[in-house]
Length: 343
Image 1 (cartoon, rainbow, N blue to C red):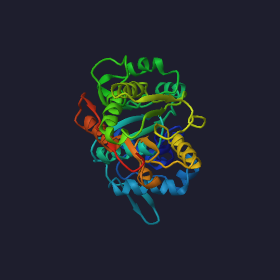
Image 2 (spheres, helix red, strand yellow; image 1 turned 30 degrees about the horizontal axis):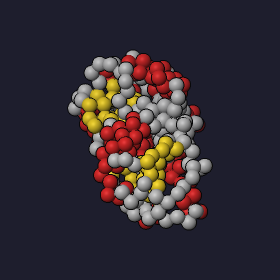
Image 3 (tube, rainbow, N blue to C red; image 1 turned 120 degrees about the vertical axis):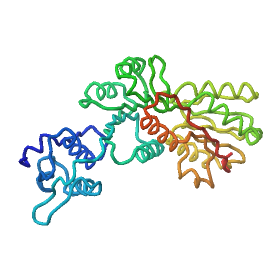
Image 4 (cartoon, one colour; image 1 turned 180 degrees about the horizontal axis):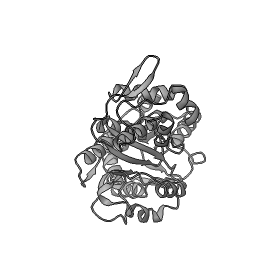
């Protein structure tokens, strides 16, 4: 095959969060599986790839080296790269749609990819909690994927998201992080039980919470977090007679001794700590702090921030297991309280 014709089968999607070198290798593997590229076919040079696909030489070279590590491509000095093996295992092709990419979502992604193994192609997209972009990405998908893995969190406008998701064949669907009312049929899911999780976590921390009189949860108006968190928070406070409040803006909320603040957004944690320090209050003594979502940094901030968090690594692993076992089960992810000096 002429090398120029190979570019008909190599595609780089600027909207995709999948690294470009993996898009390059996935395109070549797809073309081999489809019979468009044959054994011993010579591949375009790194310079040609860089020029025509508008990618860096490093990206092109990294793509070829990845194919070489999989035993699909080899190279001859002075001649370039060629297809050395077309008998690799048929793999899955997955459409992965995340609401955002944060430190904890990266943990989910890394665990998911690692558990699936090498011979899987993943097209990874992020819609930034924007329903319009979510709809556009689903409407514009061009491939016939084996699975669709979707995290359905929206700041606004997501009331009709279940209709779009219901158009996906249920045997190919995995909902991740959240169950969505209105989604019908037998589909797979790996989810958090938001109401139960926060209630149980606070209940486990009752001894530490007993030295405070008021619990405040920072829940911004423009938030993608589910209202079930508020339900679980209110239920705990009512059950154990804590004064409590929903705080929409931590930058203006009074902070007083005897209060515990639960934050969900990473930016709010920074603002909260800065304000506590400026008021010369002692974290863990006069004011308590609990933060959603465990990250390595929270182990060291102010000698340690207490966290309540799902097991993000387990979430990625369970989603991969459902795909590999072709299961339509619903799996609830473990949720943990990690006590540290901030409480």
